[in-house]
Image (cartoon, rainbow, N blue to C red; front, side, top):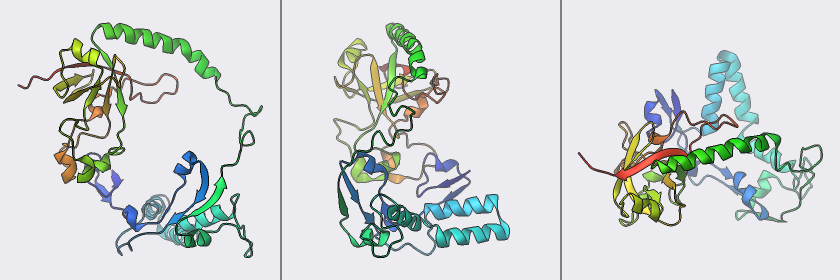
Length: 308
């Protein structure tokens, strides 16, 4: 097992080889994903803040080395790596994308359109104006309509109804439905190794199980009390947070915690270990429609924690 990571954490502790990449401040950045949430067309390139060390490699360089050595090897792999590093770097591909995009200069040296060089010079970015309509032109359906009720979904409605009826029956036996949640200072687990992000308000720990007041009262549980949460496959202990922000019959635990595993070398994260919702994930819970693992909707019980 090979991991590409700057941390030895719960996952990479299993790796035989860990290849550390450059840090985010040692590589350039051009945002693509978050423009899908934008309300204005903009473009901006952020150059590296620090010069990388001679030993450091970017993610794409590490993956290129692995791919060419494993699949090609020898002279063929060496030549392929050199060609890719010379002509197909991320910045080269970004330049081509900008040039041949809707605002691009193409290959015209006299054009006022976008190139990577032009975007680089605009240190605060370039405002390209308000969003422009692109539908239905971009739809690939034959009738240029969005199918809001695909046949596969409609056929699955009866199964979903039956599932909810089973859940209602399960609730009578004291079970609750477990769902995950994300937090502002904890969108991903690597953020737990930052002291400023994980320092806690003693009255409101970040890794807690969220429970409706009615469900808490039915189990004689108080806000802040430690509870044991059990599923078919395991159990964890964490404090309960009583709140009407969650509906009755449902409890929620944030993902990404559980940093107390042997071998984890994240010093700060270990001091704020929390409990892992993955310890409750049932491998038998599979989404019937698409066949993927169902991480939400596991049946759990919650009771006061009684230490031995």
